[in-house]
Image (tube, rainbow, N blue to C red; front, side):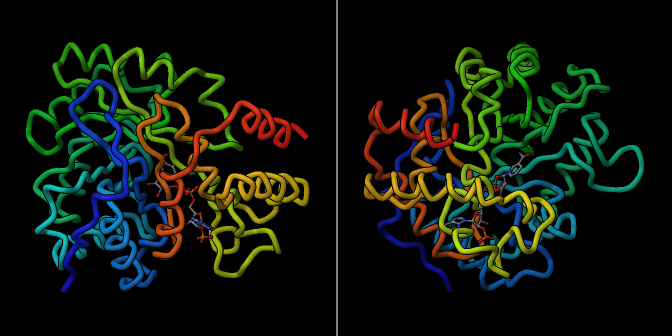
Amino acid sequence: MYTADGKRYEEMRYRRCGKSGLLLPEISLGLWHNFGSADSFDNMQGMVHTAFDLGITHFDLANNYGPVYGAAEENFGRIMERDMRPYRDEMIISTKAGYDMWPGPYGNFGSRKYLTASIDQSLSRMKLGYVDIFYHHRPDYETPLEETAEALSDIVRSGKALYVGISNYDSERTRRIAEILRENRTPLLINQVRYSMLDRHIERERIPETCRDVGAGVICFSPLAQGVLSDRYLDGIPSDSRAAKNRFLRGDSITPELISKVKALGELAGARGQTLAAMALSWVLRREEITSVLIGASRPEQIRANLAATKGAPFSEEELSKIEEILKK
Ligand code: NDP
């Protein structure tokens, strides 16, 4: 039987999510990979316990995380039932709908029909009465934004979610939906977007600034570029790595040029007294608009190692310029 570490709140720092009342841990755990139907249940349980013991209170899911679709929510539901139930009020659990989930025209995108059915399915798989954050997973350019926003607001009013999130929305759509949600009196809590030293699109699109303007937080996914920003691929592609096992990170994208940049970044991290993975997370967290970095993991040790990011020294201007120089080469 699991009993949470009594010192779990001693190390982690928590940041306010936009202008809301909610604090999120600087590091959150996502269940996109390694929580599928063919993965080891003991390992999943170990990762959830390790995270929670380290003060990681936020667990991020989506209806279709698996494979198979729904499996991550089901596995997480089993963990909740087995030993996390006593800690429910200490946890922020999110899920999403917006990508392909079930056959036919009502299992994808952003209609009221899809979102309303999907939250019920997610709650039943996770064996929860409510989620803390319910996200629209991606913008839908065919459905009126008002319909998506109204559906999200009604889900909050029904008590099935406490807060509304959006994911992968650009600045313009973030502003528009934030306005509708404000009128509905269910304010936008957060935008979940991809951001790492290797993926800078949110800087170009000024998404952090937009979120700050509308009073929302930002949570950044794939901050390690799915593991590339670590020592994982320095000596080739290990057979147990994401690049070897998963179509979302292609082995041929990890080129010798990329690895030489990763090595140079690793040296800089070493000079700061950090691993590259920890520096990559600290780098995302250097911006005050960012509420949390959303990591993935394939084993508990990675979560423990990544916690070091919360202890990194602030970056000097010189270090930040050096990072840009390395990336430009
Ligand atoms: P990361 O960039 O953190 O990549 C995680 C992977 O990096 C791990 O699975 C592991 O890969 C490797 N890794 C982690 N820590 C270390 C370490 N210390 N040393 C070496 N390798 C390490 O994030 P993800 O891409 O997994 O995304 C995180 C979460 O973000 C998801 O679970 C999901 O919740 C969310 N997300 C949201 C999306 C959206 O559209 N809203 C899209 C994508 C993700 P390995 O398996 O090789 O060990």
